[in-house]
Image (cartoon, rainbow over all chains, first blue to last red; front, side, top):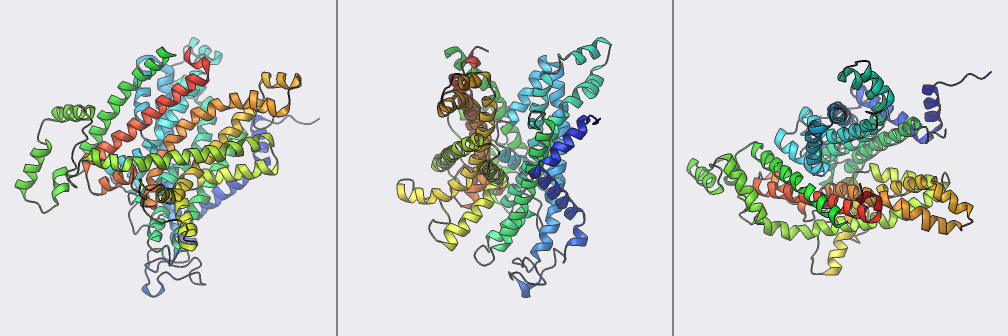
Length: 284
Length: 313
């Protein structure tokens, strides 16, 4: 007799069937590995300048050529992955934690608390993401930690709204009412009964929004409000490449491709996770 | 419907007031003295003090706040201490460029995205569907400024068809359009990606509804079911989410303006931050917030118009 598959096994089977999601997952893992092992993988020091090889094209010693200071583009791209990923992942994680707590408190307590929290969220959402990020960066300054905080501030309202919306449908669910009836406290109900039920949606959104966060970082860096040079970041590299676009388009093109591939990988993975979690979409 | 519109407008007012307060606070906590920023680090103490007095920075904070709100309601955005120009004049000069860019990108996004979304949904899991999905996924992932650079490389440097920089002369239609094509494409592809995905999933949701099955069962022709039953209902989220994405597009227009060196609100804002021009920064942020509030309001009103269920809630 065939053994019945568990919920987790069904999800994993659905994920494996989805080729796009698998490709996204594999690419994401590869990019994370590149970032972790950057010191081992980068063929050269990303900061070493060489005026004799300025703006040189592809060669055996510089696979993707060099930039205006003679620095190896491939090595800078490999090291740049660290900044993008650290900012992308940490800011989304921070936004997820703060936003979910805010959304859950608002949705559970309702009344005045909900009013205050949700109005604060509405106010933050009155600014386009990038405008808010630019303004907050101008206040906080642009180093790695401040950029994580800045982008987390942009991400928090999104997670809060999502958690709040999902929770509203759950507060009157029978198992929540039952938990309340047997005397479970609010933190316990939120942690044990509600959070596990909205986690799937938050995970999907989180995966998709890592791409948004990475793009925001690149935008800020391109404007000159990102992690400051000479630290290699993809956004900085594109900006530097624009000045030499006619003579050495590779500087901008390769670093932009790195951003594109990374965001694409997270989007493909996020779409796959969504299809995996939603029983309708996984064809049951 | 009239009551719904009035209620919705009244709801926007407190939000807008809090937004104005937030902008006021943000600009006040920015590092550095606006008077020093305007006069330079080597200005004499007396000159800085005189400018602070002139700008009203020595007044109590609540007085500055009331003056800020009062001036805004009179339409007075102040004078930039850095450039010496009226901020309202600068905004009036660049706003049409941002509006034409965003509106063209939205139109382009809908014109391309809706047919692509329909063809994807109608031929689900076919090659066309797969191609459209990959194409829109790339559109969602590519940063607008990077796409702008690629377009400049191809259509301005390799094949010099369109100008690289500037916004063109607004009074010269041809010149204006030539300067608009590449930026609108760079921004429009993002909108196209959103609209394609939205249209596809919205149609696939509606196709499962009972009334569509009933229409099929009655023997209504396929294209009539699609246009009369499916598309009309699928349009609701396409319109409402369109408002949300228009907001995203306004944010992204900043990057496109910078890449193409186009005049616009975004370029004005980034320039203001770099020059520490606080009066301009404050005004541009307020204008962005007002635009977003108006878009949200318009979206809700359109939503109420096309979906009768909303206004009774």
